[in-house]
Image (cartoon, rainbow, N blue to C red; front, side):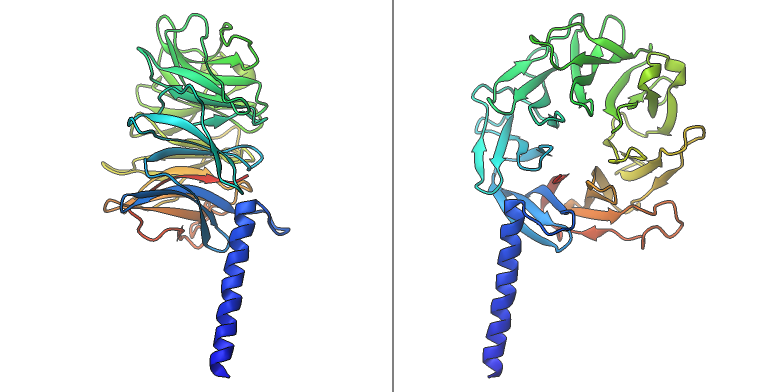
Length: 364
């Protein structure tokens, strides 16, 4: 009798795991907001795009793709997954994983190389990405329905890169080289030939790069060396190009950063090395408009942490945590980073000392 009960319990547990996996893959969920995170894992010569239920810690495989995947991005409705991966020629190219339930994979017939992030427009119609397929970097757009690829050709710029869609999806902000400096521009995304004259958003003799729209489309975060040191600044869009009004947020110890706004626009997460090597994740409180924003270091000194990604409800950050050449996907509750003790002060690992994992992306 005892053996029969044990078999019954094991069968019920297996049924629960199976049903949870089916629900995750199909995008169905209970009344609570879903907490699902896609990421790429590569170990022992095999690569997979995985989808993990953060609440329950269960993961399902969406796709096996042994060539390295370097960037993952969900469509606004959470039903399409775009990613960039090596092709058989060893070149990074954009692909689309369309139907999550059936794993139907589509890719543009005429592709161009890229090794940087994909960015969806708010309506899910377009994907923007950077490419170096030519003498100068340029921005390309993919029509998510037809998979046609088009090159942006803003008038009067030597090159353009580092895209950021406006939250309304009608404009694209980007860094571009004009006649004498690197500035931040915006262009109407509905321009038929993608060759319209761009409008200057941030104009300064120094180098201004890596634009990031705030969720309410009133502010723009960017990286600049205007003070002689690389730093993050935020400027009101309706003030541009009044450069003296750009607000200093934090100095950086390197030339680039992963920078992302929280869904409500009240916080800004970014990476920078707090020491000679590695990197840590910081969160700036953006609620104070007339004071220096408090900045909190939320990850510790023993790891190299990168690629922060906000959960859709803004309560958690997912990121890649590296230690001794081993990567893990970690999540942290960030609702109370301003307290001395933090939110229990602990990260939670979703992977356990995997070989290589990266590109965490929350499902909307």
